[in-house]
Amino acid sequence: MTIVRVGRNRYAAPVSSWRKPAWSNRAKNRAVIVASQAALKVVSRLSERTMRLAAGGRSLTVEGNTLDPMLQLLRIGQRTMGLQGLVDGDVDQARTYVRSTARVMAGADIGVEVENLTIPGPAGPIPARHYRPADSEGAPLLVYIHGGGFVIADLDVYDGVCRLIARDAGVHVLSVDYRLAPEHTAPAALDDSYAAYRWAVVHAADLGADPNRVAVGGDSAGGNLAAGVCLRARDDNALAPFLQLLIYPMVDATGSTRSEKLFGSGFFLTERDITWFVDNYLGGSGLEPTDPRVSPRFAEDLSGLPLALVVTAGFDPLRDQGDDYAKALRDAGVPVDHRSFGSMTHMFVNYALLGGGCARAMAEVNSALRAHLVHG
Image (cartoon, rainbow, N blue to C red; front, top):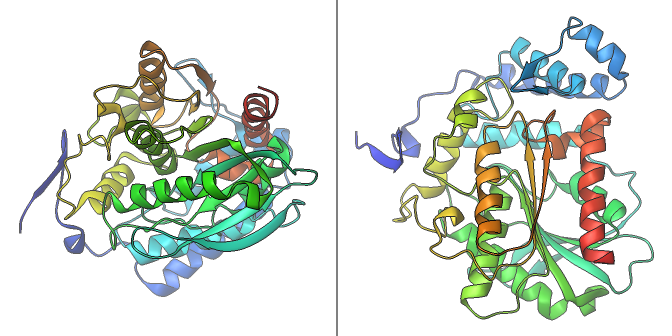
């Protein structure tokens, strides 16, 4: 069996040779999905006081940050169901799990107009979804690139997130369904994201948006791709995004940071998950993990990039990557608005649909986005 090097301190077998996942049995897999859906529905109805009591009345504090009660309860529930992270080795089952649980947080009652469309891409049409809030004629446009480790998410998983951004930030949102790994390895996702951004600049007015205020953003892997779009636009001498929204971005595929070790298990996204995502994204691509198309942090020059709204979470294994990238951008002369939410974990953007502290944190993100795009 060939061993493939995928980054510093990271080695993995080819994707096809991962061991059979512990929860590959269909019945067990379905039971986990049903239990997860039920838990999310219950948690969304509880008060924060009840959540604390359900968690045993104890709080979890690390490095001066106290974990949000809802996230602590969800964390306990995940352990109870025997889930170690987002994935357990099987691509199809990981996608099924994420997409099924996302239905609980769909946000269909959030009042924005939604239209499905397709965008010409480098390898064929790219599915996309346009979200238009009320009274938004001439408002800015955010090209949103979803997370999911380049592997497991899609437009439906992020439907509620995009509805929330559109309504509360008062901007058009164009959600991009880029090609996923391992079927399409790096840099396919970046190529699609960049093509979508270039299309959005040309067609913003057709969508009812301001063509002079087209921003790009995303979370986790989507933050990686949003950062990559900004670098490519600068290097191509194309019109730069008005702003880059980077929510707990993965910007260094090689790294083993303190936060990755500290929160590498038990906080939804695990160190093992990160390795698995990187393996799937890079496997067979011929790209090194230090390639800036994979790791924007390794770009030789970060100057000349647009205003960055960087969001990090205190209990996130990617926290230190985001903090470091915000500092590196600032040191390169890029204006940076860095918002750090100490009580949050990875995925708090998705959990915002459940209410509580995640909703308050996302409200602040949307308020900052509105301030920069609409009023700034």
